[in-house]
Image 1 (cartoon, rainbow, N blue to C red):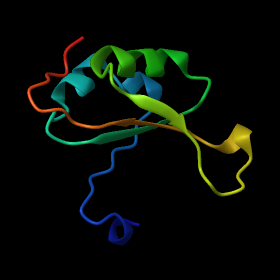
Image 2 (spheres, rainbow, N blue to C red):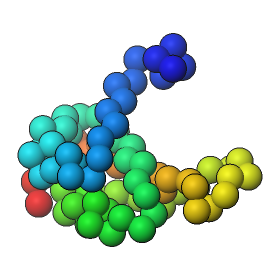
Image 3 (cartoon, one colour):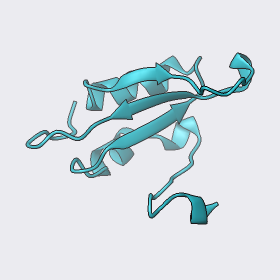
Image 4 (cartoon, one colour):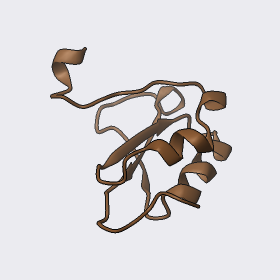
Length: 85
């Protein structure tokens, strides 16, 4: 599906791979989208620690089964902000 993303880099990883080190390496001059299992409160808390302005959850406009849909959390980059807890 690389042809659909318009140059956007997409990483997929399991919750144990989604570490503080990974979040610290993310560039702060880009927007970020995180798709997580709605029940994964630990991952959401980690995102909120590094990106306190995160918005979400956002849901698809398509008629998907709520139990099979990922929650979208979005971070809009802010000039002069570091991604440190």
